[in-house]
Length: 152
Length: 419
Image (tube, rainbow over all chains, first blue to last red):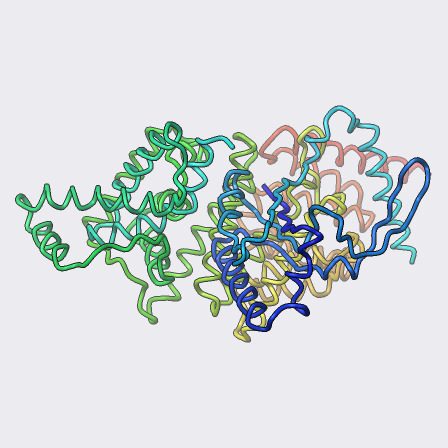
């Protein structure tokens, strides 16, 4: 099974993990610890992909609510959990992903950090709402996209 | 979290390290594996009751070592070998508690599990057991044999290793290429057991293919300078990326040309193509796994069947035919020729291998030749070819598919001649 693992911290703590705002030694230590963790994941054969994200000050949110659409610029200092990066792992079970996640390097000052693990949905997980008609429609859509590409 | 599954997960992660550490102690990999299994049994018994320890790897290592040392002390009066080990034990100070093995140890374990004194089936079983940490039950289910049979196979394999005094070491550089290709063969065998299965429980089958990919990636980490290791990882990942698309709603096979490419696994494709680039970047002549991966890469990169770079595919099949000549490779090459150069050259390519005994009885040969004849407008011959292929088809599903094509060709032939 494939899982998405997101590493999160609080919006208020974000600056403490922003390399540009950290002491060079701290940045070096953080990257070194993360590099050996990634190496461990890769050597175990479970790491498929992963990346770090820029701080939320570089991002934006599009919010749909009550029929209106609004755009909120970062940083999201008020957010309880902000994604700082992610991995995609191939593991045998959620329990295995948890065991690997527990080995993630932590902040030396004990700042709260959360690893959220979410398995990928498969077609059979979509339940009865994912009817043959919808499947058929998606297949037709894929066909249409292909045809358009072929013409282009 | 389910405690039992947590124990199993920790076991999958740590068992190889434990077997390695115990092999260092008792100097017999089979015996070390037995001790490791006993340790696992203790964990299964204790953790659900007492909770999973803070550092499960260290717990396993401590308990495993204690069991090994008990055994050595018990046996030292009876056997000379253990007397020597016991003497050495006394001179050792303390014990390592960490679960990390160095890369040579891990490689040694893999090479021992895939040692040529063992049969291929035993190599696969032992690799899954000692390196992958699968249980006898899981391995038995994967290979569709009773658990007792698999248990015997594993015990016999361990005994064989012990009797042949197979050393726990990485092969010498002059032996490495041959031994490595035996390892890669085992990994690919495990993958294909999962990938090409038409029967058996679906989950264990997918699991098996995933296990093979994991083994391959681990090996790539241990031997980063060996192009064929990366090539094999790429091949497995690119093939597995099509898992979801290659069966229809009723479990019927969907051919590459008809697959819904939006259902291909993009993550696996990206990783597979990166591994292929790594294989090529090493700048050595490509081996058969890398070439097959490159062919799979041509398909993975094509957004539609029609957009496939068929010239490249033909060239790669030429290379593959040189590395590992076989009529099956020629048949696949003929398919690529059909799309690259048209039906006339494809027919010539097919006729060159038509007399080969392996092709005479092979339904896919007839299926391809029928298609080529149809493209040439030789519909009556196409129908005949499809019918012959249908008779050779291994299952009802493929038989009816080929009969339907035969009927379609006949019908078009009839309508063509009356028009």
